[in-house]
Image (cartoon, rainbow, N blue to C red; front, side, top):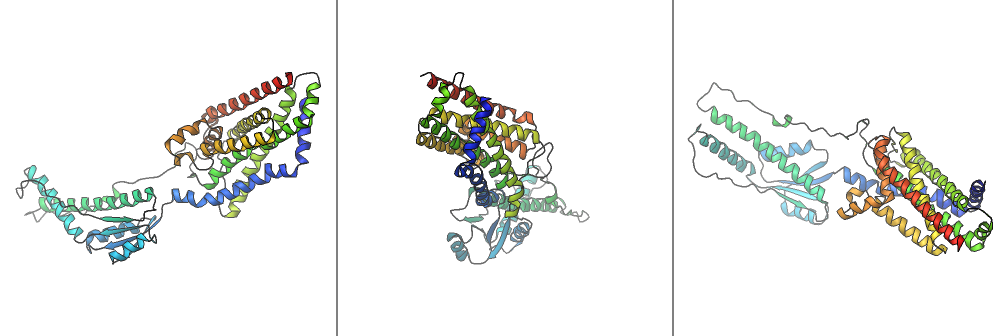
Length: 423
């Protein structure tokens, strides 16, 4: 009965506090919407590299033509031709364009000569030709790529890799062509074979999942909805600590202590009530992700097929959040101390736990530290369930950590409360 009475009392305190209701329900919903909208472009920026690239073709030969044709088939790079190198440098230097490719004069001719050198060297070493002997002479083709200093490193890697791949492909075709020329010399009956090397390798990109074939990927909604849901759940410490300390200052807790019996039902009742509030917060945030985000031009939240695992994860996160809030409420003696420590600690735990930005873009040392944040345990579990369509067994280690964390903080809270009762 004491537990039910405590739950009912906490319910009355909450419904009579419009500010507390707004803090628990309206502010998190507004926060997740705002953060999803703000981070939508950066998430797409990480995953969809699209560049307008200037191209100065001083070669005016087959290599330049081949590069242009290859870039036309590349959806992430838009090649824009220019003739004046100085103008191109100025456009990149001022940031109007992020990159430029300058193909030097006679690049095709040099590449052909290098191909001939390679073929002659190979045939000469194998005794199939006596056209040449001596050291191999290769002249480098210096293709310049100009980058805006503010461009991200992954853009540089993508563009440089694309250019290298194209030139290597052209050289391979020319080497095969020259090899046929050498072997068919003085043999007019031999017909040369035109080979297309582009179809030899096909790269298929799939998001690895045993069950999910929908092509899910981490985007602004998939990250922010579960991340900020947990952030809101851990901020349950505000009303919990505020009400607890207010009761202590007003003498309500003293009167409860004078009643015979253990104080465990009082702490347990508070824990159960605010644990339930955390679950209500989670459900509301999920509804926003599923139904409100598409109305704002964002993708709808996809939560996979393991609903049971999601419920279990939400319950575990709620246990950890409420346990932490109870510990803060019991330990500190003034609202200023509790709320200051609580807000700062939750922000730190969320920052290192991957709520603000995904863990994979953090420095290496923070990626290791994030393993100690309960918000990271919850977020990784939600990512496994939402994106990888994982089974419950896969997330059990993280859920165990959350439950142990919540149980430990609750146990410490009970002992602290008991010690102060005795004193």
